[in-house]
Amino acid sequence: MNSRISLQQLQSFLLVPSLFALVLATPNVASAIQIKDTSYPIPNNAYFVAPNGNDNNSGKSPAFPWSVAKALKSAPTGSTIVFRGGHYHKATGKINKKLTLQAYPHEKPWLKGSIEVQGWVFDGGMWRKDGWKHSFPLLRKELIDPSVPMARYTDMVYINGVSLKQVGSRANVGPGKFYVDNAKNKLYIGSNPTGKIVEATALSQAFGLWQNRYSNPGGTIIRGLGFAHYGDRALEVGAPNVKLENNTFVWNGFIGVHIAGNSNRRVGGTNAVIRGNTFSYNGGVGLGGQANSLLMEENTISHNNIEHFRKNWGAAGVKFIKTHGSVFRNNLVEKNYATGIWFDVSSFNNTIANNFSRHNEGIGIFYELSHKALITGNTVSNNRAGIMLADSSGSQVSNNTLRNNKGKDRIIFKDSSRLNKNRAEMAKGITWITRNNIVRNNTIN
Image 1 (cartoon, rainbow, N blue to C red):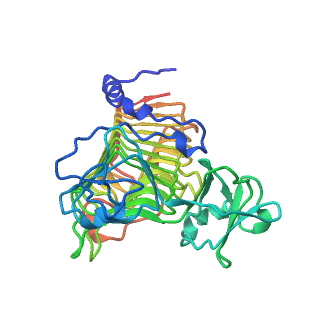
Image 2 (image 1 turned 90 degrees about the vertical axis):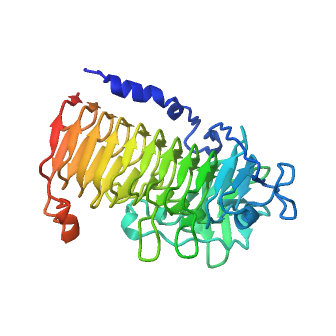
């Protein structure tokens, strides 16, 4: 076996030791995943929030903090909001101006889309919570593997940090399972909650950042925070120049962070910088969307698609579509129950460099229906397949190390009958035809 790694790859590996600082005790214990220790400077004009914040406080001192909602509303444009440590249940809101949200030095703020549930009633071998009025839109059918139909429902329940499995009827409730009766506003669990902390999802999303005629959160920075238990996603980024740094996005219903593209009324999340974050144990995808001119580096993307959505549709460690001019480098992408790194549908001129993509249940690196990628310096090992280009052109695959990937082929080119009919894209070379690709100087075992 040739286990040679290039000097460039080794240097990239050593530059990102924080990728391996993630502590994962057991797959079901969210509390075992640690927020990074950070110590960002606090400017003189900062505002402070805490889980027990009071809106009658001044917000200008760590001893007199506001609530999160008050800070988002009242802090002036350009302000820094400092989060004290602890658990912020039902933390949500719109960020409609440029702000910096950061952790208090050496403290670990967890923002959660769940609430602590009390007042359980024993009911025939299970426990019932009355007046439960939290429900979420069903996910698209195209995402769902028929063998796991309950994945379409994004309700979540945790007992002492351990997730329960959602079932479709009260009759199927048993130990480690739960059922939501939306018609009767009841929540059932099959494990004894006595003396334990029970958390159940009550919100779809933490923060939305949209730039339009009424809102301008471009340039916002979010750093050092943890996001968990949101029914759909933690963050929706639809504003330019947003920076996410050293955050933790775990146990969210479908995706950790979604970056939105441009629309007729809104500016998309262009020029985002995603650095040093952890995206793990999310229902379908760690991070994805449409992310033109993205810089994504030194992140850990692991154990995503825990709900086992269709691997050939939308599930992945990270998946982008219609993404141009982005750089994805020095990231650790491992043990996702799907493809690791996936660029799809008319993506163009992207660089995928010096990443470790390993032990994923799908393809290590997948470039599909797209044009002009530089895939270089990556170590791709122990995946279902190594590197695949499908209906893609004008790309270079060079200086990668591929080891122990399953299947006969390690670097795969595939062409199908799919053809692009968008004339503007075709003029740029995005034809969806596999041609003019270069493969050289790769180490394959």
